[in-house]
Length: 290
Image (tube, rainbow, N blue to C red; front, side, top):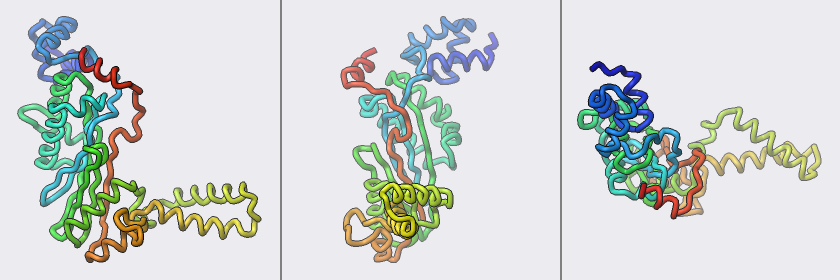
């Protein structure tokens, strides 16, 4: 019998199974949604009736690169326990190689590429069904390089933080050191010119109120704000930060020693900006046994 796309979509939302698996299940059960859910569960394709409303805020971040580009990406799971699963780490590696092999710029484009006869999105969902948790490719960023540029990368805490740095000139060790600094210190901007006027004006206003609340005379407040703002901007800009491996010099001065210049940098920390569910270890183990 003919299966409508809306029926396939409804089954996928309830089970988390891939589109092709959902279509086959509906065909095998004459379009009966409930029977199709049972069919998928019996086949081991769906281990939960619905994963869509779960929060995936754990997982791993990674960087992969070749001669043309570097890709930084974050793959999320519901629990840290699942992120250590061999199937999860295998999926992380598979995604990395897929991203390098295809011309993608965004997460949405990445999820549509072909992996062994199905989309990457469907491939992830199928793996999630085997592990029994919601798994999400949360974000992907691609940095393209020229022949004169070098990409350095660093993955910290087994994948909790990943960073990359793109340098014009220099060498591989310098690029890796900058990526390590980015992972450790988390700069917000490359240099002051990258900061918008709105951000600077907002910070000025905060510093002005802070000085006034300290009881400083009105006539010296502006000078204080100028000095404090200059210090603040240096703290958040990569090129001005004290280099993590040598606090006596800035990151900018360090790369100059290798006749290099930082072009850009990226840093992903797993789960940043995501409201996490609070679970104890016993709950994590129990969730894996269902």
